[in-house]
Length: 335
Image (cartoon, rainbow, N blue to C red; front, side, top):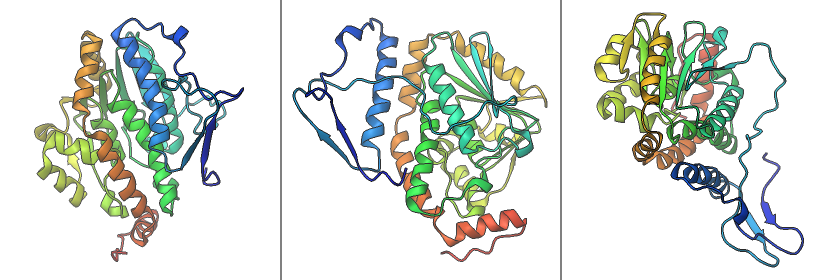
């Protein structure tokens, strides 16, 4: 909300905050403790990482750490739809999240990102869910960010867009649960970022991968600057980013972008098999392993948020969007 320029936090009844609710500290196992602090740290980051100034007005006692509640974040209000844009199903201990806008090649609209955040937050709190599969409907994985919805032209709006996007990225990469991507058809731009944010990528033999950010005047996002070099090496990542050329499934498998190939139409089946294997592992060991592997993510995302917000305001980005809509080559001027 750009109309909110500063935030004051205070307490009622002549007291600020007595800290964590001792009577509610009923966590006696390591996993429950990690979940409690995942929620607490979400609140901490929302304050410290915010772009707005905060003031505390303290009356009476301020003791210990603040408390927190685990509730979904209301980024968007939506009316119920008979055809949800994110389909949620269960296969045993595996949660399956299916992007369900095939007419738009499952573009990652902001509404879809909000749904992902809600479902991933819910899944993280559910110990019965031991693995998560992400896939797309209609024979396509994800065409990336919704170009038609990229109407941000100022720095502040760009940073806000990526605050929401990075909440989704962190919900995947910082999760304690293993993820598998089932890729059929195209994975483009942020769609590639979504796929390789997962631990394992199952690609159909006809899958295609492309990172065409430079064609619309943008830098790679959705954590790709962090994840892609780690998967395929910095040299190959540079080539993918700067050339914006597509890679087929066989080449993706050869260079490590995809972990397993599957006959067309069977990527989800193979992904569920892999997820079931992951679900057999010790949950705390998996969570600790993923936590160690995620080191460095926050710094990369902060750089991405600032750089991409600046690029949203450039004439080259406006030209890239116009060229995309007109289906013509862009004429960039470096401005």
